[in-house]
Image (tube, rainbow, N blue to C red; front, side, top):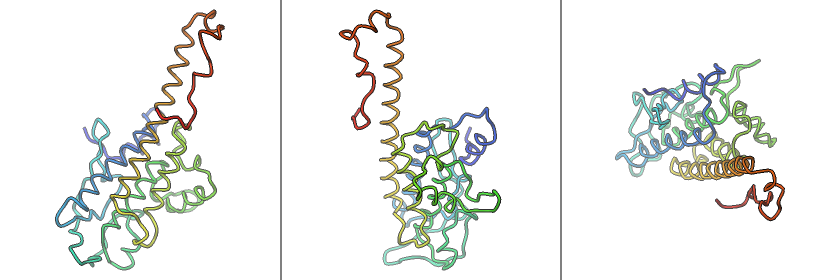
Length: 247
């Protein structure tokens, strides 16, 4: 049974009993979605611009593999020599490229902007349009926290700090790099795929270190007390690895 990413994120946020996607799952979902968009932009001839990338158009199967869905608004993209195509604006409020809205000029970077919003939702748990005392766009919500160095105030709180801080910073940087007002300042989808792979690698390395420390602690608790007290048989300093170690 497939569920939308939007449903999974909202269900976890609205129910304390729902299973929360961990950090590694979130980045893996983001990566697989970008790989689908990269194929549309570079694997199809002519390329395809989706025009309505959002969490409700990303489907997840039982293995949490992401597929981009709903191509009702899709348009063929640029051919050789073209910088854009001119078309009636389509998309969803909060996700649609602001430059495309103002100029009606469409290219692949419009999907990059929309995906940046999706990535911000994945890492923060906030919707694209946040309704608190006043309505605010997610980019406006994230940016000041990011600039002040408060990444812990950006990441979804129900993760309870169980993520690699470097991976978190990188994910936020990638998302914000996708969302400048000017399309020319945004990366390509291939760039995003490459950066998210690095982000996932950091997350996996952190998870391995955490599991290694847990396994070391579990093993130590099962040893007889006389062995634990023997410095020649057990060295407590070997129970954890420095953060810069490669595993």
